[in-house]
Amino acid sequence: MLTTTQLSPDELAGALREIGAERYHIHHPFHRLLHGGQLGRGQVQAWALNRYCYQSAIPAKDATLLARLPTSELRREWRRRLVDHDGDAPGTGGVARWLKLAQGVGLDAEYVQSGAGLLPATRFAVEAYVAFVRDRSILEAVASSLTEMFSPGIIAERVSGMLANYDWITPDTLAYFTPRLTQAPRDSDFALAYVQEHARTPEQQQAVLAALRFKCDVLWAQLDALHHAYVSPGLPPPGAFVPTPRKPGA
Image (tube, rainbow, N blue to C red; front, top):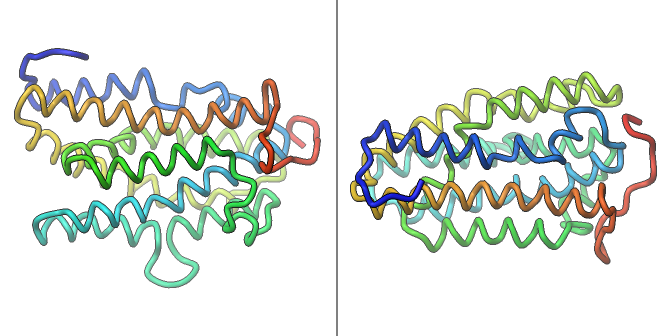
């Protein structure tokens, strides 16, 4: 939606949801293959490995924004995200749970944490997101987090589809996602209210919409890279993880 007209708070929320309906990576072909049981174990491993790069960067991204927030109230609110992802003790938090997911699909923890085998496009997309949150306005940085509005839907598809279609994946493997079903709506409710309150001009509202489109592009680009490297044409770049060939669902 490109307009110079001032949107009401509800209209702005609707425009943001339209972006998700069009651009969120729930629609990506790789997502469909993953959840439909059409990938082999090595392809699922490639997804888990590359997604760890993104997951482990989220608290770093949030820390850059936390340092810029002007009030104690805002910092306290955003600080919860760091605890959600980094935990409050070793082995806790979302990053640790994603590492367990990667181990659950057969990857070595040290290999995953090393960053070896990542697709270059994954690294570039993640770095671009961290830089965006660091360098753009606070309003744009907050708005870029609003993909969390759409995450309960993709989590439901991901968990049900993977458990139904891969007999080597267990509920414990996918334990990362359970807390996100409550954390993501809580965080997106706050971020949406912030954006509705602070995007007061058409220019600010367009910046908010552009920020969400950018974040959707970050997520989409990562799946584009996975599809190109591991599905079609199946050409992982030099140095990238190379799966052991297996049949779909194996």
